[in-house]
Length: 474
Ligand code: HEC
Image 1 (cartoon, protein in one colour):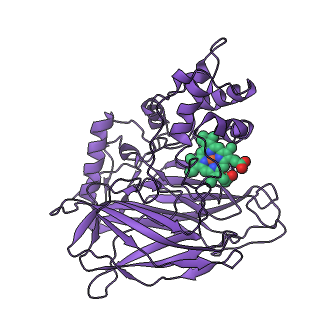
Image 2: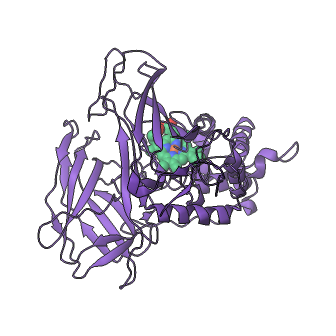
């Protein structure tokens, strides 16, 4: 690429995309919040659709939540607690555990399980009104779930079973690598979707007990080389990928034939019961002959300079990173530890400062917010990313074990972290321009429109401005 116009702009940031995104949200079945007067909110008509969409993926047998929320008899005893937890919205302890703030930043997020204001109001009205059951004929058909031994993502092409690991009820944490295992794959293939499960020996069907706090894996080829495969976003965390993770169709991940798979970065954590468990990883492949056309990398940055004072709310820490390449971010993945309660990420380019996202943080839930295709931030090299972490080390934060302690950076949950991790496409200048052009077209942008996360999208040419330096001069 030679030159293109300088697009350093000082236009105020408008919330154009946010407004558009609201229109794109699917209509929710529970329009109950709008029900007026005689229109009673009932379990069968209004509450079940909410539970099906936002709660039952976890609140059902063979999953991780402490109780099932499927039948009326199961739900009724929890009515008041449901009202309280849903009213927390994006704050710590909220249900569903989804903490993205809705009044700022990019809102078009895949698999968004959050509740609308109408739904939260409907739940509150239902509970305050004695949680009536309603007409059984109003019940929607029940959801079907994968049984034990089945995969939510569908039939896999390959399952690799990892080695067992154990933790006694009260053992300290363990970090390390587990022995590599053969994948059993005899030819090179590219992965379309991947899902990881922890399979334990516990007989529980409700409120599963896990010992794998997290686990990363690596693939090792026939010659013993560890592959650099960009980032597999499958840090094992059951709560994050309950339905598996589907890669961008143009960026499938490579698994060589005759390779081995190693869980090489594992953190085990006791759960209060003696437990033995292993990880199973399932792959669905692209058809033979498929070749990826995009490169995926990982944006990961943060700071280890975190000094959190004891017993104090409202502590704020900042961190910065200048992008050396053009990137397309695929998700917002804030990572903190126990004292963390909120993180925001800003993109600074030229004179523009825009908040990409803010999210509450609850260290019981490591959430990723995956952007819809046309909402993925397209950030030119030179963009400064600015992260802002908020800490509360008082007893009001239930994740803090002892508010009297000073804490610094470290790997234990009681130490602190402050970083952003995300698979990102690394784009050449040509690819970057092409991505922006395609987005302008799809979103029907006019010259001068502002789009959060794409500082240059609204500007094809700015006449009279000095040229942006070509890539090879930088
Ligand atoms: C991603 C999994 C997940 C989803 C989705 C989810 N929950 Fe939960 N829920 C949990 C887990 C795990 C717990 C136990 C830990 C805790 O209390 O935070 C829990 C706890 C609760 C509790 C407190 C139970 C107690 O012991 O007091 C309530 C009430 C609740 N959930 C309601 C809901 C409702 C209502 C929804 C949907 C609007 C929902 N949850 C969505 C996993 C989930």
